[in-house]
Length: 140
Ligand code: DQA
Image 1 (cartoon, rainbow, N blue to C red):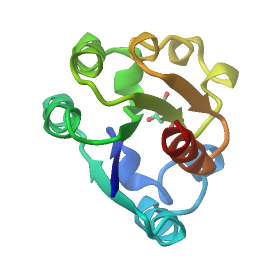
Image 2: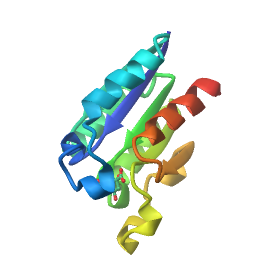
Image 3: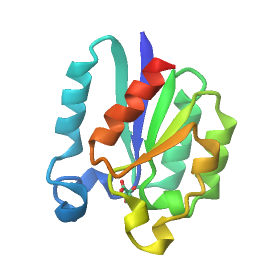
Image 4: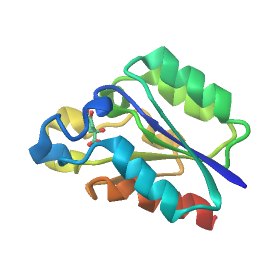
């Protein structure tokens, strides 16, 4: 069975509550359950942390065995060389996802330290971006 791991970074535990005009009013857990039921043949796992080191540890843990990682590193996208290095270190393809269209927002959100080490980047499609990333990983 294909193991795909979704990793969400800081503040994404507050989806559904946080800045709903930007990120929508659905909590991630309920979205994840819908996604999981849509792809019963996929061993879909979810991890969220507000801590940079915990995200790096999870990338190391699953990055040599999973078929792919879908990563929304939140604001760490724009700051973290350490997460960029973790992505480069593992063998699993990583797709960077952002719920919002970061290019339509503040200029500090326009740069990603992670993108260069990712297979691709999906942003601006709301939560559906996670499904699009999953489809891409399954199609490869
Ligand atoms: C985000 C965009 C980031 O700039 C922001 O810091 C987030 C969420 C997104 O999903 O749109 O926390 O990654």
